[in-house]
Length: 437
Ligand code: F3S
Image 1 (cartoon, helix red, strand yellow):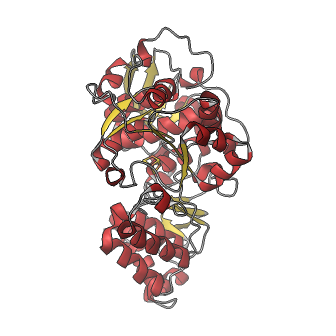
Image 2: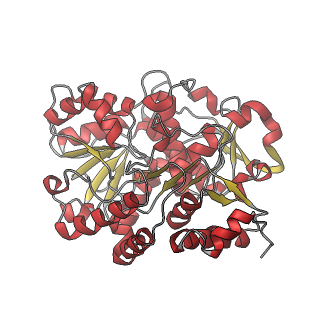
Image 3: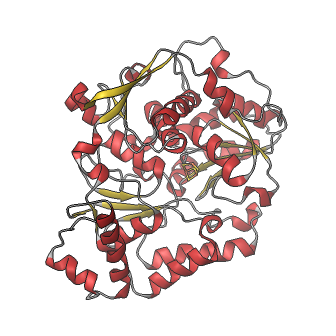
């Protein structure tokens, strides 16, 4: 372990001057700093906490949080919360049991007592008040959001664990190592893509191929900007480019352990530094087809009946909700459809009338949760379909469901018919122009 330089104030926090809750947080931050050889701690602007669902926390996790809150710990920086295991307002209506709901509510209340904003979303970067800024140091735990913050926003964060992100929020600092240091933000792999990328699902399939090969490295996409419209200045609406990048980053973090990527002439550090960002002897990956990824991600090809179609992983943006509403106008679904999103986004979508259109068709815009962190098997859901790469990876693993993976049209068709039947999108002749699906 290296020697970690602490300021006089940090030494006092570690000694317990500010109480046992803060001392516990400081111990976690300092221990991580020593393990990873950090020279010192750095102030953070914002924290994002993952590991919120009772499904993951269990009774021991809830007790740990309540104890920390009872010790008087309180966050010092704006801090947001990942999705919980259920929608907080409508859990009874949605069929969640009180045995699950009560400890889940206790966990959220413990976070709230510590001053955490109960935003219950994995996309804090879409919130007007929390969108990360270039050069800010953060302590974010949600892996898909970490990729966005580092890559798209040009902020600095490691992939924190749930407790370490909370600890960093309580002391307002994190250990300065990993992606907080410019030297670790250089690309380890150069990726060339020689096939069209037309849909959000295509970006998920790309994330599978790259994530599997890169692991925890840093990919530099040499030509991906071709398939991306410019990012709007106001990203909180989502938009075509944002929705594609949201899917790409989440999949890279799920199929690999990527926390940062660069896109030539597109993402902020690549715009500034260009190929100087690429390490000497970086590996080269050439992708000629997404077909192998679709074959693996669309894992249960024998499954045709679908219990739940789920859109919004990471949580759906306004533009994704609008696209679903446009396709469902005047239609009637044959199976359950969840568009999972943040409460704040649902409120904005309600104001636009899109939530009501989806509800009239028989679908639900579900806030606060998703089909990975919710106990979907207890709701009778065994067979799912999605257009999201991360959902295709995690739901079979964490929820034990069978999964079909395809583009938005395939998913909507499955929800309308109750069974999966459309051809795989990679085989459809379609230039990359047109609306994302
Ligand atoms: Fe978010 Fe759930 Fe996907 S937390 S990134 S919607 S698995």
